[in-house]
Length: 428
Ligand code: IMP
Image (cartoon, rainbow, N blue to C red; front, side, top):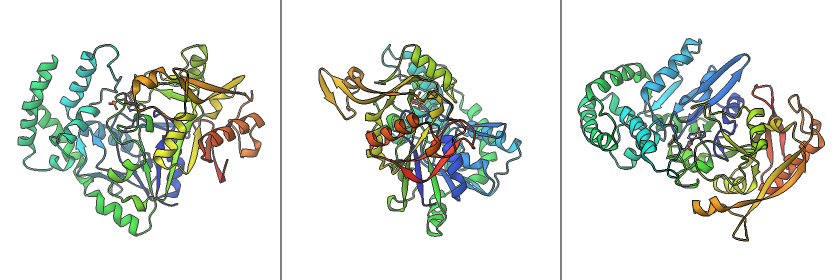
């Protein structure tokens, strides 16, 4: 398989973990390039369920090499906990797991600042973050005041840390939070450094050697296009480049070495946290989809907001990411619905809008224009080919491809690896 970027084309939680797990069989390397432990990828293998936050899900496949690239922000304690969880289940990571020495560290004060900023924000201004310290960690990176993975191994780390703690304690105090203790952080981070040392490397030459050797790479996106710092519903976004371009800036693999982009979309829409969501259903239908789709966050357990498929968002995502094919997930969640709606455009102040407006206050006012299609009223879980899908399900999928201008290559009907259909050639 060529070098492939797999991204979420909605607000995250599109079921990327499962598709990545299926695609991993065809690659040698799996790379995370942005975000941090705000992500949660759920993979079910047989009766085992794995929720991974930082480690690429390729780790569950022996022989695959996995990289946390420099675009990721790493909470070392969370990473150690996750790696211990993986190794305790008998999975060996030695020699096949690497963390970029350029990846920025999430520090305890980042988590507290994240939590207190949310607490202090006036109603309407909260983002609904995961409180993992992601925004403040990327903030330090952009302000050129961050600490990086490689610094953890530097003899000067204690001094660097003490300086950062002194400054951040002023911020914490101003926010009404308790200051942190530098020596306490040093001792826990030292333990993490000892554990992580064998895995910290300059991953840029490593990945470029893999490219030269023709070893296929899968770049695993976290979050989704509508949460991207530039393209998302700013300011209700995460702080990283969750779109395809982030795969290059977050890994060091050049753009012309990327061959393919797969966009993952749910057959409907969900969002966690605050921010505009034009096709949101706040009625019994939203509740029905949430229950059928078990729509609760893998990282925070929060109930996800649910709504109809938004073709405006999907078209926008296809354009930004250069999506070649869709992976459409969770089709089975719609199995029992009598009718299904698709948002095809928006209406604002009596005007039809076909693009996602940049201004979040305009997007808040957007009313979806819907198209309605009949449901199929039977289970799709055992589907073995596109042609064997109920006619109405085929029609629904084909309409999504038509509205977005992108064919579908992967369909997923349930959490198990087996409930995935990779079509021999894309349809639509
Ligand atoms: P942060 O990334 O924790 O700063 O949160 C910013 C926004 O992104 C919030 O609305 C979160 O709910 C959302 N978010 C962050 N990570 C994920 C994810 O993996 N899936 C879905 N939403 C996410």
